[in-house]
Each structure stands twice: as C-alpha cells, then as structure tokens.
Amino acid sequence: MPISRTRKAELIASYKEFIENSHAVLVGEYRGISVAAMDKMRHALRNNDAQFVVAKKTLMIRALQEAGKPVPEAAMIGPVGFVFLGEDISAGAKVLKDFVKEVGEGFGVHGGILGDSVLDAAGAVALADLPSRDVQLAQLVGAISGPMTALVSLISAPHRDLAALLQARIDKEGGETAEAA
Image (cartoon, rainbow, N blue to C red):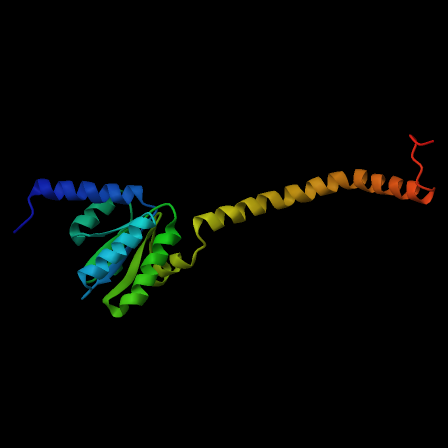
C-alpha cells in the first residue's frame, strides 16, 4: 500500500527533526537480525542519547537535503537503518560497534554524516574509538589548568624560597625568633 503525500511529508519532517537534533548520523545495513536483538540495540542506544530508525531511503534523502546535510549515497545499500547520535557521539557509536561484534554479519555500518562531512565505513566505526565526552572535558580542563598551575608555582617560588632561607637561618642561629629575644 503506497504512502500518501501527507504521510510522506510528516515522515520527512520527523526525519528532518532527528537530523537537526543529532550531532552525527550513522547508516547501517541490517539483515536477518531478530526483533529481540534489535530491541536490545535500540534500548542500549536510547540509554546513550542515540536512536535507531528504519526509514525509507528516498524519504531520508529528502530530509537530509532539506536539513542541508550531505547524502551518504555510497552507504545506502540494501535495507538500511539510521542511527542518530546525541551529544556524546562516541557513546552511541560504541554501542553500535559492540552490537556489530555481537550479531556478526547481520549488521554492518556502511558510513555516516558528521557535521557537513560524509564518512565512509571506517570513519563511521572510528567514532567509537573517540574518548567519551566526559574524558574530553577532563582533558580540556587539564590542558587549561596545567599552565595556570605552573604560573602560580612560578610566581610564588621567590616568596617560598625566601621563607625557607629565613627559616634555615633561624635554625642555624639557634632557633631563637624575634619574639623570644
């Protein structure tokens, strides 16, 4: 049964919203995967701010074009689903990579979109190897705080050295302080 024009417009609007709210889109082919395995993957993706959607390719292409995103035409081979990754791209990509290992040849990542760039299969899978958002933030804080800590140490060094020198002199003279004399 064909889809009506109004239903197509609704689906395109829905897909466009998914695209605009995601930080990356991965395209994966699925064949012969059980419903239970797909539900398990969808649940794991939802827990990591990502979502898996099976969509008609022509409608998804129109939604991508309307959203101003490139179309990964080479990735759209066979029955495909689209994984919309949230803010922590690597978390959702890791779930997908683990799922691919679990089900074997039944599911494969063919490519994706990151920003305005089309990713091939290797680039899409490489997103899973990125550090998580929390690790990236910690690295940023470390990179910013490292030079500041060194600067504070450098500025306080003369005062610290002078205090240590005076204390050593007091200890050498017999330990009497000005208050005791």
